[in-house]
Length: 139
Image (cartoon, rainbow, N blue to C red; front, side, top):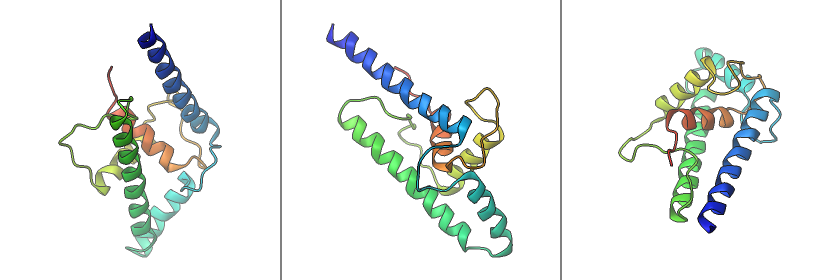
């Protein structure tokens, strides 16, 4: 009986997390100190004019956010809880790949029934959505 209740609680928690991401996706209003899609695109454009300045900082930011996601997953694994996404164990991921995942998600959103992301959506939320779509966890 406890397993059934725990399973329902996990399903509810996942549903709430997905609802929050969907809300952020549709409205673009998720409170964060991160980088918005509009800022991300401006930095990419700026990179063509001044290589290795703001773009390098953006790449480091994306890498740091990914590292935080990995730490969160490690914590969840240590508590025998469902992970946010399930990266293959031997798969190493670099900054170029992360930006590729982010760009692929922006071109073809995996949530929102094909609607484009709003310019003020945090790229951290888009990256998380991309990772969840690329490496879903199966129970």
